[in-house]
Amino acid sequence: MPFEPDHVLLGRFVDAHERGDLAVAATYWERLAVNNFDRVKNTVKGFRFSPGGPGIPPDEHGSAASEAFLRVIAMSAGFRKRETGRFYAALATCVEHACQDFGRKELRHQRRSAGSLDQRYEPDGDAGPYDAALAAYDADLRRQSKDALDEEASRQDAERLVAWGIAQIKNDNHREVLELTYLEKLSGQAIADRLGIEPNNVYKRRERGVLELERILREQH
Image 1 (cartoon, one colour):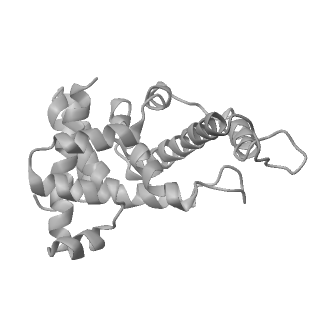
Image 2 (tube, rainbow, N blue to C red):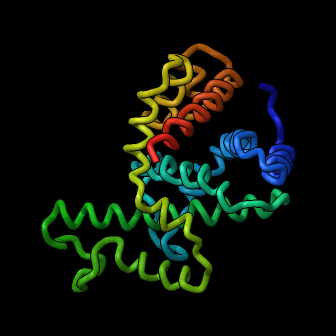
């Protein structure tokens, strides 16, 4: 399938929705999401809980990006704008919310694992390592509208779903590329080098694999 730019895919997505052809609309949105996979990863890497504060730890970037990417896929449920600028803004907000929720999930995990908050954000304070950053970010988000999509997606364990869904994909080439993308967290060029294929073939396999993965995950819900 030839590459199509974001503005073309976005226009076709909206047109298909207006015709009531939801299956075709979903296909265009999924291709749009794949086009912006690197944008999602870069937003996760640049995310900060508060201006100048900490972000997602580097060893968690891949997991956070996987969770954020699933939210971008699901974002099609409420997005109907044709302007790519508005799409990019919505994508950035969606990924930022995913990062915030990822931080909360990691904080809960740390509390369960430690049994008590032995690590302190401040030497003499009561807050854990994410508490102050999340509090500042929460204060900012309360000034913004937060849609139902974020609340629904925040309940999902994205990494578990991705790993399970990839294992269900029957096409070996598609499954292998998704495993290297989501589980080993390799770049498109690194995957091409590993498999001995052109980067363009990596993107094609990933695009087709994501369509299959998204279908599998939908059937689970």
